[in-house]
Image 1: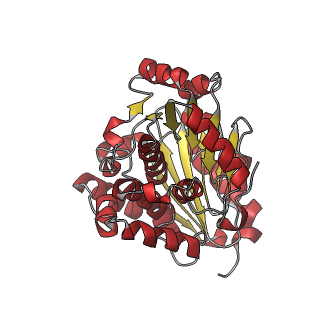
Image 2 (image 1 turned 30 degrees about the vertical axis):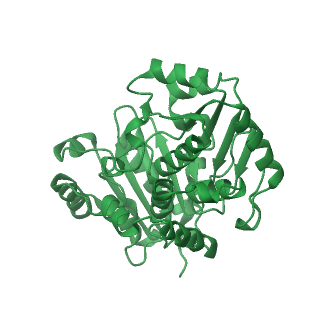
Image 3 (image 1 turned 135 degrees about the horizontal axis):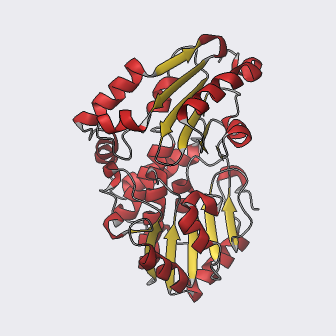
Length: 349
């Protein structure tokens, strides 16, 4: 595994290896994780548009669609979705001379069906990712857990390729969206001077940062606002002794408010914003599993917590998990675990 040293430079030996793979390839497929967020969609399309500028036949294959508020991202309407056209996607993957894995560190993050195909591919793979403990399958691996976003890593990858001049307004808009969403609008500790330098350069290239913010955060449907209001007023539990807040929503509750992917985005951060709360969890019931989002501030490691108890992982202060148990079981398990972590959760920022 290569650690992207000092957040400023990319190892030129690895860049040369990646450059060689790109040069030799004609058909390139770029992939990201299931339930893609702004960083995933922005990264794959920023890279895809760049590869097309190099004259490559590049396409994006995602496990499933992102939230509607990301539909504006340049190129995204051309995305192939595995859950909608699995045969087309599988053929594209098997025909690829090279494929990229962006914003995920293990093939299981793409879902059972798509991962089964990825596991059998013989074409070389380049991974660009910032999550902990990546798998070792990539031919070339760019991994740095200190990076604020995969989109920033893609920018630095293109820059190290010697092609920063090829980043135009459309590529820049993709990468800006990825950086903005994965940093909570530039407020997380992972944001560095380099992040702001990159963003400044993207704005110089014509990126309309104000419009991107409006597209992502100011396009609410009435049902979503009512769902958020219900979740905060009726489903928020605060455990003051453990400095913890938990929000949960069942399938029936989601259906009542005509839930769409992305409608619960940011709920876990609202729970974390409560004064005195150091650990927040959002629990959402799906068709065959329960999904969990974990956030923390300070020294509580939610990546380790998610890996230990909910088959998940992610970053130190932001992670995800899942369970095939009932949502009631998951909620009780969470509450039963809190006393074990009381000392770690009790601190003053």
